[in-house]
Amino acid sequence: MIAHRTIEAVWRIEQPRLTARLARILRDVGLAEEIAQDAFVLALERWPRDGIPRNPAAWLTEVARNRALDRLRRTTMIDGKHRELAIDLTELEREMPDFEAALDRNIDDDLLRLIFTACHPVLPAEQRAALVLRLLGGLSTPEIARAFLVPEATAAQRIVRAKRTLRDAGIRFETPRAEELRDRVSAVLEVVYLIFNEGYVATTGPDWLRPDLCAEALRLGRSLAALLPDEPEVRGLVALMEFNTSRFAARTGKAGDPILLLDQDRGRWDWSLIRGGLDGLNRAMALTSAPGPYLLQAMIAACHARAVTAEDTDWIAISAYYQALALAAPSPIVELNRAVAAGMAFGPAQGLAIVEALKDEPRLKDSHLLPTVCGDFLEKLGHQAQARAAFRQAAQLTGNDRERALLLARAGD
Image (cartoon, rainbow, N blue to C red):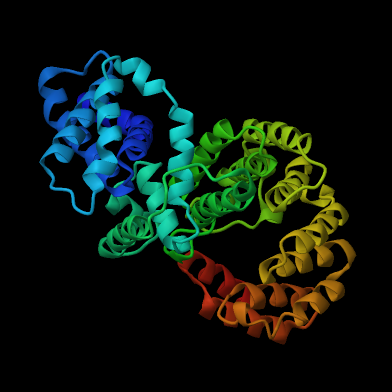
């Protein structure tokens, strides 16, 4: 049992590194992942019997190296691929004798290449998210299926299709050039935030909150910040996730029912995470004079974090930040949040006016968010019957059981 727990811990840490190094040499992310997994399967067989090696990472590297060499030697390459790999095969044989040195050599560069490859824009967002959780999070297919509440077959299909698409499209295993870096970083951050948001408010299922998924996204974000310390948006996203994670203990009641932000017991917030978020936010703001979308969202979250009570919240500042966010990254969801902030800062009538302008927005047609916000403003304005109808409509649209119960309760009230 101890050996299995050790293997699992080593897997979480070393699997991305091992896959990244193999992918650089093999030029095939799918093959690299397969060989890395073979090494861990062998560890599961031998370590409980023979004991944990003194240097588990070096042991895994040696096994993966031998498996890669065997695979390349016995596979009949076509279309000149064997000749193309000849130099890398020699490199693979040459660079492994000093395992510890080889493990550390260019590892940051290799991890960056793996992150950017897994988040390549050629892949749909759901495939990127599944591949990132597999390659960088070390999650199994059943774990990824549970993370997004989809059948295992669906999760497996997303991963297989992602690797096939990367291979067939001839995507190079490389860090983007300077002129492409900003757009590709945005794609990476989008995937990490997608994973976090799915945990923060689950789209479907019985649970309001998925802390395991949020923790995985935060871990990925911190790893990315260590690799790209001078990217303000990376630091901004990590700060944003830390602020939001700090509220977990206060976001649900004993029965798992949701507690909205303004009703939370702020004494249950994790102030160590808040301090970390504020420190990261300050570092990010020192790197740029033009905050991007994630940094602006972190600034909004910081306003909530600094408020000792809900009444102390600086809604005027939040409203201004949402106005800037609407210019930096316009979207219906940003407009909806801007409406909430404006309603809190300047009165529900002003917020409702912004919401009314969104009623014909096709991207919100099947979302419960628009009628939820509309119902909140109508209730504050004293239009009880209309508010009740809005909350009932929102309850019909949400896929989350806890959220549906909350909306129906608000309709009943």
